[in-house]
Length: 432
Image (tube, rainbow, N blue to C red; front, side, top):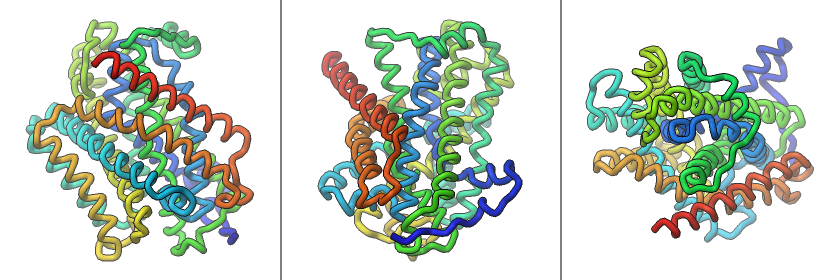
């Protein structure tokens, strides 16, 4: 196995500058998890259950961090994306099924995100959402295809700062900090259908399959940006590179869950307290927030919806494109021009266009969120098992197989998501 040499952040002596230089794929992946559909889910949790699910932010953090770090290590050590690594060692029909589900789920998620962004744009500017959906989708598609990878990665990295809007909005909402702190450290569990459905939605939105594919592929893109254009050059990783990835991923997942926490805190302190417990979208949450928390909180919340959509839609489309292209051994990479990897870009474009079409057809955004949640819920458990098997396979990972804590929290994540899927399907059958 060839070992890659360390470059980049390792040369910086200032620890603060080095820390921010290390941040990249993990930070972007974590921020992309808080997309408009995720914001809607967390807003619904806060509005319907108050402070009751604040503890889930701490509960899901180590599970999410472990899985994403395993995916990052797979990308760094094998020099391939997740689908590429799986293709080498696992049944092809299973991967065809997984990639098909991922593509469909991501299209529904893109549609829901574009719809949420369009609602936010309409609230801010008065421009009809029917006009802004194709406009937003077209701009995102053009930017993703036409910009260089370095410019694209820098754009995504700095766009994560928009999520601080939710932290600031929560302070403007003036929550009951004593009650919030208690709910954070003392879990409240109920067995009624509303609580279980909301809990499963929060967990399923937080640990999403598209993030697994994006994390590994983004690590590979970073390697390509350093001049390692072949799999042989990328294969292997130094202890320093794996340490940098660990710092990046843990930071990104912590950031993601902190934002998730403050979204639930803001909506619990305003919507739940004000009796607005039945919301169905992030846009409705923003509108209801205005008379309760003031124009500043409303503006921050609404701008956050647009900003996170600009970050998340390319990640959703990109993760599906990487998965499909790696499965069929097509040339992949945002660093390549369209003519060099046209099939990769066609899949990426088709995912965004598919989302636009669903919105133009007038399909209910809440219905799209529900369908994507069902597909993600079905896809997550087997994918989590595969990710953990790859992470522990010495033929693939060499001496970089999972350690104790990665196995502990990674398998725990697989168990939690499997249980969530079973309960979800049981509840769905029972309610039908």
